[in-house]
Amino acid sequence: MASTEDKAASKENTSSWKDSFYNPRTGEVLGRTASSWALILLFYLVFYCFLAGMFALTMWVLLLTLDDYVPRYRDRVPFPGLAIRPNSLDIMFNKSDPLKYAPYVQHLESFLQRYNDTEQEKNEACIPGQYYDQDDDSEMSKKACRFKRGSLSLCSGLSDTNFGYHDGKPCVLLKMNRIIGLKPLGDPYINCTVKKDNPVQMHYFPSEGRFDKMYFPYYGKKAHENYVQPLVAVKLLLTKEDYNKELSVECRVEGSNLRNDDERDKFLGRVTFRIKVVE
Image 1 (cartoon, rainbow, N blue to C red):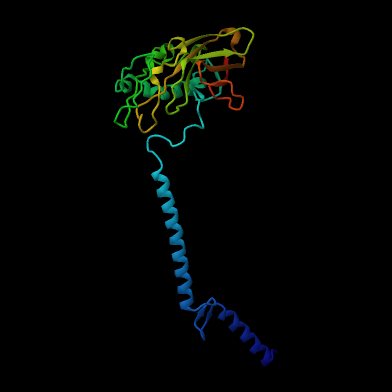
Image 2: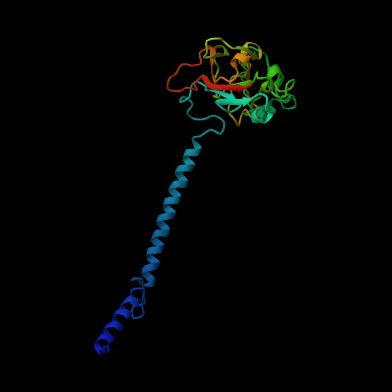
């Protein structure tokens, strides 16, 4: 049976535990009075408002230094990379099974929608072989030159809606990444090679696989809203000897000052992809 002293001690411990949250004698909550809590909350309110104000001020000053149309620094990527469509570095399909090559065909058709005549008629009929400079234009919105998908001929998807995949002679599209102000010297064109003993014949569209100068320079996404990158289509004329083999194809931008031999960047001015057609 508990003694009177044990009961008193237990009551005192319970009272002490409760007082740590709220002490009715002093009116303290968690060890602070109401005025103390009000002062500390006011301090943190002012402190965090000050931090938010400093952040907003620095962001406002930073935004004042930026241009909506041209990046402030453009020297980190002086030369463009080379990209391939369909967007895959491993193109493998069975030419006798439409379901196997359908994703590649659908991707190409979707990608070329912006190159339809209905879209490109809105753009300018520029002079081939000349840069389309618009620096003196007072308007920030720049005009774009036409690039109709019909110029890709057999790889346009117009005469052959399967882009050659159904007969084992597939088309791939190549484009250079956009770089504001780029004006390549010389006459850039695409040259592709297959790493095998016997060369594979290829057809390039437009003629000789050239990127015409009239599509340069590029003025940025906001200023050049209707701009589309020029394309080069490569049709691989594979034969029965090439079927059921994995072929490595390397395409490079030649004939200009654009770099294509940087070992630190495998996509700078070049791209390598593998293709395998199963008969």
